[in-house]
Length: 313
Ligand code: C5P
Image (cartoon, rainbow, N blue to C red):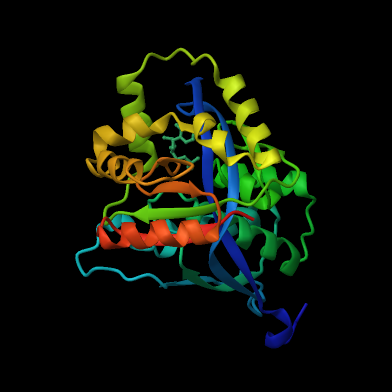
């Protein structure tokens, strides 16, 4: 199938996510951790444009080119985790290669990725990019797999990738790949701060294993129920009481910044605040957009890192 460029190129947004609640229920035999987490997608998003490339005339697979550009400022001394990965290291490349192999297909792709979501921040940028690429390739390559089959493949790419395919708030379980979509929730206005250094997810889970016993934690069901009720009713006054992130203490053993952020956010009247996923970004929930802008201005002046004002969608 040959499509003209203008017809075949498609551009989509790939949203960041926040975990409003993340509980680790135990360690698994496969090295992962059993989770229960409530995630919401954000308006803060990367943009991914996808153009299919036909197989060569000799019947060889078309190339997969992914070009990554950062829309956020990068210090010349930026840590390795803060630089968008190129080539096979990029999750988009890995996802497309896997889909092509499993779909028995020879098409290639030219992908332009504009990164706005900071890396190694716990905001799910890489997973979201991979989900967007899988969705676009599934159609452009004429595979047209159903949602379930695509989600199973997405889970092989990363635990959070199926969440991004589902495109909405969800409670996720298992290692994160079992997605239970939630009906519409009240939108949340949030401020996120990303410090100069990132955190590697595997290191944070490893630190957690060192610091806590393998058994699960009690009281998590009440916490999730309380949070869901507050989100459905828009009762911000109790939201902070139910928010939690089991990875925060572990992340704080790896980066002194986590405690600095916690202290800075505690001085302001956020509805609730905590580490974003496995970090290193930290976020606070606000009552409305103006409240978020006001608190963001104060945090910007403190020069803790890059400050983002956004909302859930
Ligand atoms: O699935 P993903 O590749 O995003 O996971 C990155 C790392 O995070 C894993 O290699 C593992 O160390 C850790 N992880 C975990 N339990 C989960 C999800 C991730 O231990 N549920």
